[in-house]
Length: 245
Length: 300
Ligand SMILES: Nc1ncnc2c1ncn2[C@@H]1O[C@H](COP(=O)(O)OP(=O)(O)OP(=O)(O)O)[C@@H](O)[C@H]1O
Ligand SMILES: [Mg+2]
Image 1 (cartoon, rainbow over the protein chains, first blue to last red):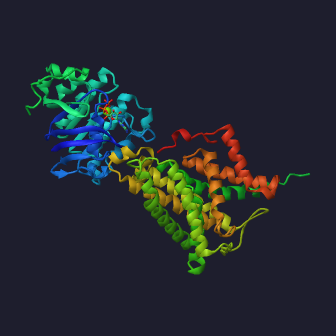
Image 2: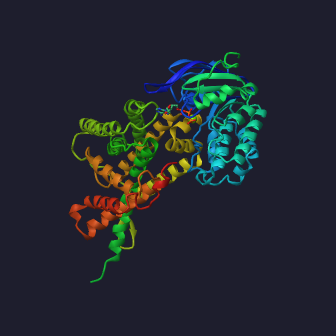
Image 3: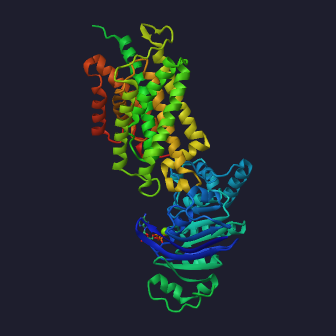
């Protein structure tokens, strides 16, 4: 469904990503793991068209999407939920959700999806007329995920959905992400919560300094000592999963 | 000596009327500011062009005044969108995406103001053109005579505000405009065509400024240099109300209009244009976020 080959990009003249290859198959969860400042969000920005692609190609759903304007990429069915929990604080919960469906015209299906999001996140229903500014951190995370779903994406990209949340809320969020996958949406999830992410995903990539260091089936990576090392900054020697897939 | 309440009332009434006009121009300036994070310094000239467009449509071409008003708004909107597309957009692209280009943008606005003024000068010359509009007999409110143009101005300005409010709060497109104003990257990720929305914001703001020009025209006259004073007063109105806030712009406009009329009536009529700026300075000294303190919720 998503096929990224040799992607390089950066900010101004500063190169961050150096030739990233990454695939997401339909109907699954793929996770991209890495420490702070390794280029995970930069990668998602390039996929969404918020950063220009310097080199390489992005194929989504059989279509080359590199360097399309961001709003057209959303129309192709690729939606991103950013890391910053960026709800629109001065808009109500429901206005935020409706914005998520901006690209769609099918009023009845939009109303159904609104119900679906409220069923995923009942707390949002209770707060639908409240300004997003008044929500707690966990509720905002629910709101932005729900807003992403309102676009009815084929692939939903989540940037660190568990960041800065309490353990209880993190469990809720991951459980919901699993339900979203089961409802037929493919997911590319950026995470630092390595264990949880690998338990949920089928496949994982580890990024460091703008290159993919390790990749493999999630169940193999979860026990791979090199995965831990790569986070601590040590040298990663002949990982068993590196080239396999 | 008896205090003349009825003339005080008249000054207040005139102040409010002229104030809502400052208010709607300030509304446009605030709209552009909240959309693009720039102060559009050529906005006074758009207002001036609007007034000339109105004059051309109603006098040269003979359209009825309300039709001329609408046509002038449309032409100014197109002019504004053209300027944004051809000049400003290149600058905002400089940072990669629609981010502030800061100083360059401000200077470009000043430059555009001078260019537009000179174009107007070439077309219409420097002389003040009268803009007589026959709306019939003035209203009589007790002792006060209120020319119809004043009443019309107040009504049209209020209608414009209401329409803008409805558009921003109740329509899908309005929601998208607010989204762009608050956060462009997220707006992009919602699938909103951000450059198109910015164009729309410019068009709206310029159309409203033109309406102000066509409304003020019959009260004063139309001339090439009318823009800068309006810009400064609308700017004062926007600051007084809290920069970037739309309701604040209107409230600020009314406060400036009243201050100006009361100042002219009770202090000295020779310095009518000073009062707006005295007020501006006072507000900046005492409450820099604007009288109405809504500045924290500027965006969206
Ligand atoms: N707008 C920007 N301009 C310049 N450099 C940037 C910008 N945004 C990020 N960077 C740099 O790019 C590098 C990668 O940043 P990125 O946000 O992709 O990291 P990340 O993997 O998402 O980290 P985190 O887990 O902390 O979110 C960092 O060194 C960062 O300083
Ligand atoms: Mg990040």
